[in-house]
Length: 338
Ligand SMILES: NC(=O)c1ccc[n+]([C@@H]2O[C@H](COP(=O)([O-])OP(=O)(O)OC[C@H]3O[C@@H](n4cnc5c(N)ncnc54)[C@H](O)[C@@H]3O)[C@@H](O)[C@H]2O)c1
Ligand SMILES: [Zn+2]
Image 1 (spheres, rainbow, N blue to C red):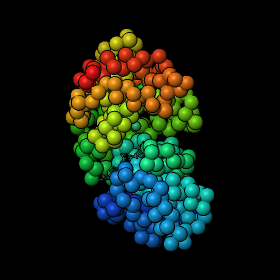
Image 2: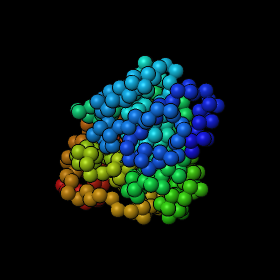
Image 3: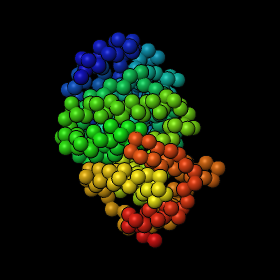
Image 4: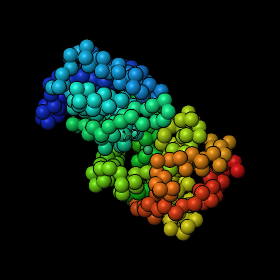
């Protein structure tokens, strides 16, 4: 990868002084793929969501200052969504902004977090509260980097791909359904077009709607209830994508109950999610708690919860009249406690 990447960076005139930010695990597994890309040792940050904070950003600043990084330096973020978000934020703010190159190494980062230019960190009082828009100079995606990814992490990213299929592309949805085994086997010829189409969908939604007013909201399909499930379990039980999988099931169930989503499309989605593998249990969670958490979500605008409902596999709409009773009925269907 490094030779191709280096020549790509030269082609788009990324400054020659390049510093890598990664984490210990990713660097140990994939260092060989990036040899010669930077002259300095990489700046390695700690692994885990609890280190996605301003202290870690400060460590990156320190590494940059010690390496005498100046305005004509660029930062290469090699890792999952956390490395991308933290390193991207450091790049957005160091010397009022230096270019960042995103090299995502998880499926979630390749299809989602590395695209769109949002970077940032958590605050002790909430997730992703500190951030910036800092579009990367380049996103370099190599599906071969995913061969070392644990199956559960891979699956978590694949739920976001399923999301793109439901909101925008029946073809993508069908490909994932038909090629599930090859995808899990990390067959790069199968992965590449799936990742490319996912990136294309996210990029087109983001481009058409930079400030998240209309179309970009479609990307929140499954996220209203998904975020609520993550919050009530204090971000410890689910990988984000797993919570989104439940959120998609709830939204689809509401839509089929309303008669706006054909039963056959509901069955296709729930069948695919079931086929992908087990999800963490939800039967011990209380419906009231999940509803309360959903009500606190940033998708509540003027007191109304904005909800993305699928109209069929491949299309969706944003509605603002989903009632707590409808959500409660669907959560009950999943087995949550009254
Ligand atoms: N900026 C955005 O638009 C955006 C969008 C979605 C999510 N996010 C953020 O992304 C983060 C989640 O990202 P994630 O799911 O990639 O998690 P992550 O970065 O924590 O990576 C998951 C785990 O996989 C390891 N890993 C990474 N690449 C690997 C590889 N190739 N082989 C083996 N192990 C590997 C990581 O070290 C980590 O332990 C969250 O903080 C979320 O807020 C941001
Ligand atoms: Zn998501």
